[in-house]
Each structure stands twice: as structure tokens, then as C-alpha cells.
Image 1 (cartoon, rainbow, N blue to C red):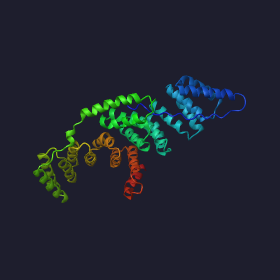
Image 2: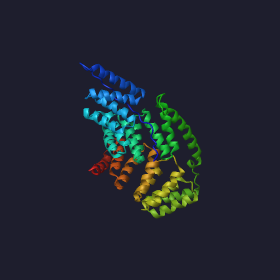
Image 3: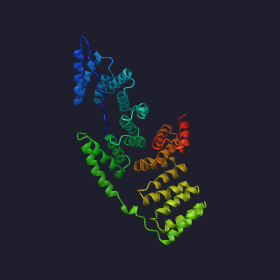
Image 4: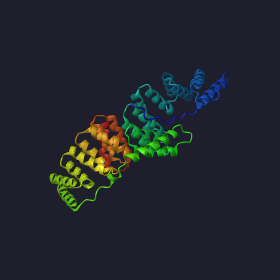
Length: 388
């Protein structure tokens, strides 16, 4: 699959140089200073040479090993980069930047599972200011494994944690536009990126160009008439009232018939389509309910309810792939703040026996919900059991 995410902030760890007394101290400092200057200038080959020479003299500096690894990473010398980042972590097991870059090195080597195994706990347990950067790195790896939905989820998490962290918006815009063709939904992230990015950001010109393209694509595909269902006639209103009475009495068959009659008389009636889905779901026909909810969603594309219910009906019918597709390519990208999407997605992934993904969605659902809500206890217990 095409690599959609092209921008991730790379923050160099500060190089802490302790003056060395005795012979050779000045030479060591000069090598470190030269490497740092070359690294900041983008001359990675010269930086790698200087840091490599310095590492023969300095054996206990995690920042030095980290910066050597960074230079090698940019040169695509991945074996040397891996060795340097691992050395930094041996010296300083808590060196977060070295762990992040080691994971990115593994991912470039095709060792995606190892990279995710390192980044996932880091992105959960790191300090608040570090989590957005780590979530962006995790999103890149997930995208490379073709788990686009998890990449989107991690970027949504990053934007929620740090609303002013520009890279998250660029990466999210790329995925929504290129992976899902959600041009209208991709517009806002690119718009925010252009407002938040530094003037010298190398992706700024591309973001502005894409923004113009997305606005044109969204305008060309818009159909404003779909958001204005026709006003129901008296006979249609009567059929809906009749269906409501049957529905309250749990008479699913007569309710379905009444709502279907109303929708046939007025094919643009959102209420009739939505209620038809309810009646079919109540009557134990979730597969047919999916179609009714899909029609309701087409009639009112700005409303989240029919899309969520469409996914719920597909899940109830046992059509797990269909439910996942609705949630990941439509519901979550368009309504990322709607918490029930993530709970349902956890159930879907668990039913598909993709337990690690179910855990990710379930934990994010709990992250969105109030911690004092006792009604969440059954879900917490289910998630804990899933982990064991």
C-alpha cells in the first residue's frame, strides 16, 4: 500500500557534554561539537563520522549514541542506527527518544510487530507532552502494516491530547483523504495544520496545495438536497404514527410494515427509514436493518445516529467485516468524538479474535468516558477479562 503519512516530528535529544579533565578532553568536545553542528545542518554523513570518532573516546553518553543513531537513520544505515539506539538505551534505559527511534528503525527494517510492541506501551505510559509525538510514530508503523484504522485512532488520540501539535493534523489529513477518500473530513485537519505549523515547515506548501484540492473535491461531490428530506404528507405521517404504536407494543411485524409503507410513499423521509431500521432490529432481522439505516444515513449524511446503528446492526447480524468497515472508514473518521463507536469497535475486534486491537479501542473508549461513571464497570470487567 502507498505510504500516506509523510511527516513526523523528529526531536533531537539534547547532547549533554561533561567537561573531561586530562588528556584528550578538548578533542572529545571538539568532535561532539562538530557532529552536533553537522547534524543540525543536515550533513548526516559528516555528523556520523564525527559522532563515531567521539564514541571511541566517550563510552557512557546516551545522548551521543542517540545522535549517532539519528545520523545513521537519516543515511538509511539502519543496522548502525539500531546498534547506536540500543547502546543509548543500555546506558540510559529511560531514554525515550532512543526508544522511539529504535522502533522507527525496526519499522523501516520491516520489523513492524517489534516496533509496535515497543511503541504501544511507551505511548500509553509516557509523560503528557511526549505522548502525541509517540502516537504519531505509532500511527506510521500501524499504517505500514495496513492497519489504517488504528493509525487513524492514534492520530485522533494525539489531536485530543495536544490540540496545537501540528504534525498530528497533517498525518490525519493524509489518511482521511488518501486511504478513505473522505475529502470533506480531511479538510479540517489540513486547515488546522496550516494554522499551527511553523513558517519554515517543509510540508506547509504541500498542505496548502492539498487543502485547495480537497475543498474542490468536497464541493464537487456535495449534494445539498440529501440533507433536506421532503416534508411528509398526511398519509405518511399517519403510517409513522401507526408504526410507532406497534413498536411501543413490541409488535415488530406490523411496525415494520407501517414504516415500510411510509418510506414507500415518501422515499426521502428520514424518520421512516430510521424507524424501519429500529423495527427490523427489534424483530430479529439485523441484516435487513442495516439497509434501512444505510438509507437513513444517505438521507441525512450529517447525522451520526444512522451510521452508528448501521454498524451495530451489522455486528448483531454477525457481519463483523461489514461492521468494522462502517466504523473504521466512515463512523470514526467523520465523528471521532462519538465515544460509542470505540466501544462497539472493541466488541467487533474481540469477536474477530483480534484481541490486541480490541484492547486498544476499548481503552480509548474508557479514556473518553468519565472515570466516575459506574455504568462502565461491566465494560471494564469485560476488557480486563479480555486482557487475561
